[in-house]
Amino acid sequence: MNLLPMNLVATEDATDAVNRVWVTLLSGTSITFSLILYLIIVIALWRVFTKAGRPGILAIIPIVNTIYLIKIAGMSGWLVLLYLIPLVNIVFAIVVAVKLGKNFGKGGAFSFFLLWLFPFIGYFIIGYGSAQYRRA
Image (cartoon, rainbow, N blue to C red):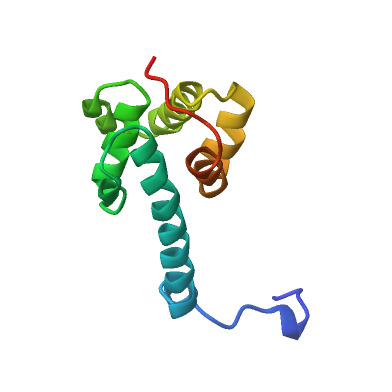
C-alpha cells in the first residue's frame, strides 16, 4: 500500500536515474564550462610559472603543471604521487598552496582561500599582481 500522493510516486527505476546523471555530467554545457575554467587556470599558471623562472608552456600539460607547481612551492616533484591517496591529497594540496603562497610573499589565509579553494582567482593575483617569487 502506497501512502504517497500519486504525483510523488517514483515512476522511474534506478538505471534511468543513473543515466540521467551521466547525461547531465557529460552534456555539452558542463564540458564547455570545464574547458573554460581550465583555460582560465592555465592562463594564470602560465604567468606564475614565468615569475618563478619556469617555462610558462608547462602550465598547459595537466600532470606536468602540478609537478612544477609543487617544485615552485619548494618540494620534490615526486610528492605529486600523494595526490593519489584519498584524504592525504586534500591535506597535501593545502600544504602546497600555503608553501606556494609563502614563496610569493602571501600569508596563510590568502593561500588557503585563494590558492586552494579558489585557485582561478589566487593564481591571477599572484601571477599578474606585484608578488615576487622568493625561493625559500
